[in-house]
Amino acid sequence: NPNRRLPIIPTMLTAFLEAIRFLTLIPLPFMPPTTGDDYEKTIARSMAWFPAVGLLIGAIGCVVALVAGALWNDLARAVAVVVVIGLITSGLHLDGLSDTFDAMMSWRPRERKLEIMKDSRIGSMGVLAIVFVLLLKWTSLSAIPAGNIIPLLILSSTASRASMSVSLSIFPYARQEGIALAFMKERKAADILIALLMAAATAWLCMGWHGLVIAAASLAAGLVFSACCMREIKGITGDTLGAVSEIGEMVSFLTATAIIAAIK
Image (cartoon, rainbow, N blue to C red; front, side, top):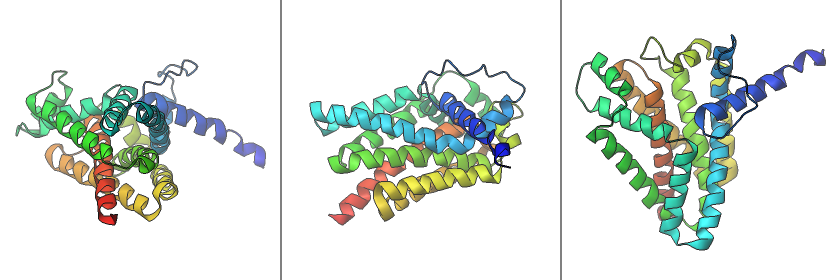
């Protein structure tokens, strides 16, 4: 009976909108408050749509790149793109990156590392991590030819958010509470499949085989980093997922730069 399938579309749309609200600052005033009885299931299903939100973020980055490219040089364009993408995500992923590196590089016991991640203050290792990642993003993106900027921004944003979905699907949660715990309770194999298919299709449409290599490098970087977190704190957290996204995006830019240099 086709009528039974109708509720699927609103459910998918809600999950997508919830993913936007979870990962960005894009206002969605029509969305209900995050307190409903089915909120955990809704937020968990949004995991499959992380790559779609990444595509949206990448599209906004493309608009910035086109405008900045028309006004300034390649270096200024790269800075504008990196800054705007950081603002769209409210610095959430960068905050996770800094908290994660502050904790992981402290050489403290597991419990103390988890406490450091909760601390709102930023330490020297966190600052270094942010500076290192932003500089590599900026320099590598500024070296990309103008004709490759648009597809790369779409690809990298999509793949890095898919990397978050993959880590959520594979690794356990390191804490006993937290919003990411909802993903762990309700995660399904179909969600990871949807996320991977989105990333692969976007990569192929943007840059063909080279795009698939770039996306694979981003996903691999996220998995390796999550595995390191697994060794240190016995799982992942919201902060480590933010770090996965930032590292995945950085690796996408660096891989694309390497491929372009090799082709030349």
